[in-house]
Each structure stands twice: as structure tokens, then as C-alpha cells.
Amino acid sequence: MSSAVWPPLPPDQLAREEEASSARELAWLLSTLQENLRALKSGLEECAALLAPTENGSTLVLSSHRSEALKGFVTRVGTRIVKADIKLRLPSLPPPPQTSSSPTPPYYPLLLSPSPNAQDLFLAPLITIRTLINSCLDLVDIATYTGDRTNAGFISSQLKLLSDNVKEARWLLKAEQQPPWTNPTTNVPPQAFTPPLSPSLLLTLTLTDAALTLTLRTLSPVTSPSDLTSLRTRFLSTLSGAKTPTHDEANKIFVYEGRQVRVRDKLRVESQDPGLMSVMAKLGALERGLEMCRRALEVVMGGPGEEFV
Image 1: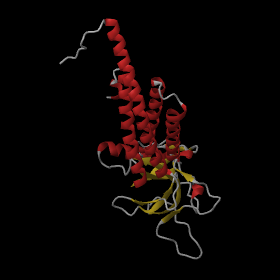
Image 2: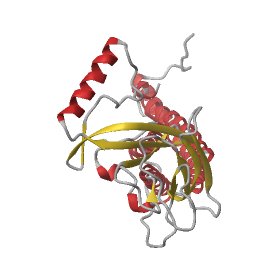
Image 3: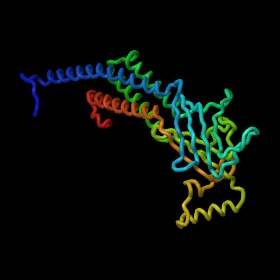
Image 4: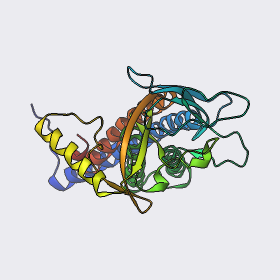
């Protein structure tokens, strides 16, 4: 099936008419994209509201799978953990702290310090995500109000920046960002809890698939050649199939704060956060919408649009 202009036009006039038609199509698309940008802004504002501090926050239950090793909950308000009440039962933990007014509890308690001088417990990925969303809102305002909305190149560049920011924000929610735990700054500050965490107890908080992920490790020093021999023996028995390690770091030696240590127990618990799940779903929809807008503009501007297929 083919189309033709009747009556036939001279080649030079036909070229001018085609150019004029393409210009009208581009102008129409740029006008339509302004509506898409307003819808995008609305979606971004919904994401920002879900990450903003609220009165009650989100209370997330934490429980180890098929064991009593860890039970408790944490409360997230915006980008901060404002409350935590966790009970641990691991053989490698130090004795629970004692008080004169009550007997020693049968578990090791982790209570977030209520002191106003206590160090705030922030979730770093959420701070970055909130910054990216605010940057997107600024980009939409520029493309809608202060920039040249009739300039296809300008709008294309704004759409690319928006797409990059939304993709990064969604990736931070989905893929776990876990720097090496052997860097002390990766772990929760001991002073965030009352009483402060034992030096042999490390706690790391990350995000995975919009879930709060808590990883707990208990450390013991490698102080003598017999410790190294014991580790080699366990490693060889694992290779022979005689014994299965309790966790993936059981047969390794690490350097933490200048000392050689081994990980005696490692526990990982996840708790889905409904608010963060909603943010991730909205960001995914916004990402797909931006890709469609970019592809349409690329095609009308004369490009193949294959990058966004």
C-alpha cells in the first residue's frame, strides 16, 4: 500500500510540503508532551509524599525464618528509623546487659536510644531517592515553565535527564546497595542503641526490592595459629562434603578495625515496606511512560527510536 500526492507536485515543492508537515507534527507532539510532563509531575509528587515524614510512619515486623533467633519491629518515618525493639537469641552473643531492678533476660535486647542526643538512624538510599525525585520535579518545572517548550532538542535533553533520575531512584529501591561491612561506616553506629551495641555485634540496614533488610553479624578475633588451623579444617571438611557451613562467611577471615576476625553467626531478615513498594511501582510506571515519550520524540525528530524499544 502506498500513498501519493495528487495532483503531482514538483520535487522542490513536495520537499517543502513534507518539511512543513514534519514541522507541524513536531509542534503537535511538543504540545502533547507538556500534558505528559504535568502527569509525570503528579506521579513524582505522589512518590515524594510517600517518602515524606508522617505522624505514624511505617511499622515493620522483623522475624527470622523458622527460628526464634530474631523477633521484633522497627518504625520508619520518612528516611529515618525512629524506633526499634528487637530481641536476639544467638549462642555467640555476649551476655545480655543486667540491671539491678530486673533479672537477666533470656534474650539480647536491641532498643533504639530515646535520648535526644542519640545519633539519628538514616537510611542512606532513601535520602538519595528523595533527592533524585526532587531533582525530577525541578526538571519538569524547567521544561514546563522556564525553558523553551518549542525547542525539540531542549525537551529531548530534559526527558533524558528525567529518565536517568527515575531509573536510578527505582534501582536504589530494587537492588541492594551494600558496601563492604568491614568498613565501620557501613554499619549502624553502636551509640544508636541503648545500651550501645557490643563491639562484637554488627548491624547493617539496607533496602532490597522495597524491603528493609537487616543483616546481623557476631565477630570473634583470630588470636592464635590454632584459630587459623580450625578455620582451615572446617574449610577442608566443607570441600569434602562432611560439613555444611552455617552461613556464607563461616570459613573466611576478615580485617575489621585493624584486627583479624571471623564471623561466628550471620543472620539476615527482610521485611516488606508497603510504602516503599508503592514508590517502586509508581517509579516503574513513570519510567515506562518516559521511555515512550522519548521514543516518540526521537522518531519525529528523524531518529530511529530503537534505543527505547
